Length: 97
Image 1: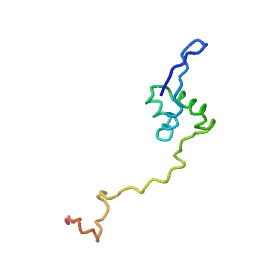
Image 2: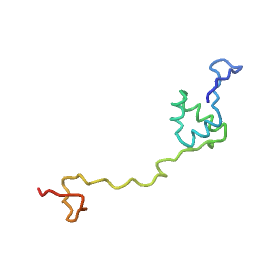
Image 3: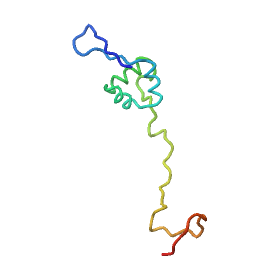
């Protein structure tokens, strides 16, 4: 999955992430999730995604909050300020207060 390749430059060796693993992981996890799993920084994962052509350069390849459907309405079932409905399902029994 992960290989450290020595380079001719001073400093840290180059970290190479397996292409098949990265393509699979990119479909199921975020960049940060992949980085945490591999124990590397998100920049290394992001650069590998771009280098392999899995993710386009210059834009976020993951869905943003703008593309998500709106959240469901709040669940007011337990709100004590709301009146008890007049018609309840048979499996629910209401005790008058």
